[in-house]
Image (tube, rainbow, N blue to C red; front, side, top):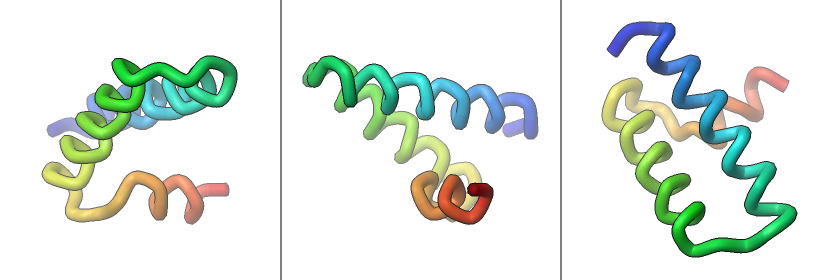
Length: 55
């Protein structure tokens, strides 16, 4: 997976996470889990820990 694709995943993750804080939704939760799983499969890192390192 290219870096640009990983950036898109991270952006999408952040966007969905923000929407979930406003309106809980099962469909969005499953989408978050899919993104986390895909990111972990590609990089070997957890997405949450990666985001904590950045900020």
